[in-house]
Length: 200
Image (cartoon, rainbow, N blue to C red; front, top):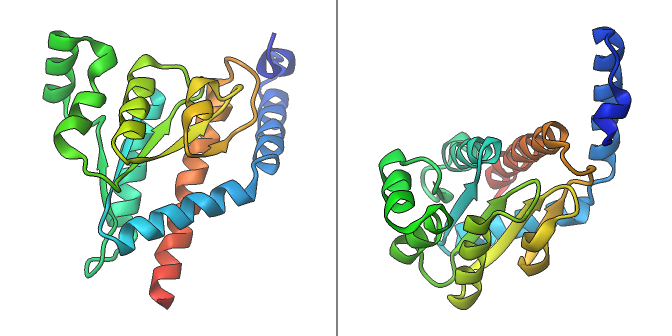
């Protein structure tokens, strides 16, 4: 039984309050130093014209898309933009690679075509154990691509092999709070970056 099961009540008002309180606790327990390191990597990528790739499955795939949108266009920087690509967005590519090579290959084969040494790969996964993400991280490690893991639960294999990570401390199977927190990290990071580059 995870925390959401323990917090559940048929009273929606009480459950709403308990869920929000639990989410506040999770957010309080995220290490701000991990966020700072991620921001540093993104600013360095921008300064050196490197591409940042985002990957994820399910709800995390939509977070990858949202993060890419907010970072590349939401920062409103066109003279020296963040070069960002979400590898979750092209249905033709995903289905072709999944059909021809298997679902575990859908990200790594895109990296083989698009990435260059010095680029950044950001994986978003609550469990941190998806084969397609692990394969992409292993490829990155072998090809001078820095990796960042946004995780939850215990972080899984992705947290172990990533160069840098932001961990959201939830219990197992708490996908809602994990994905809530990852979206908040998107808005926090891009809100900061939008403003810090104005001062440069």
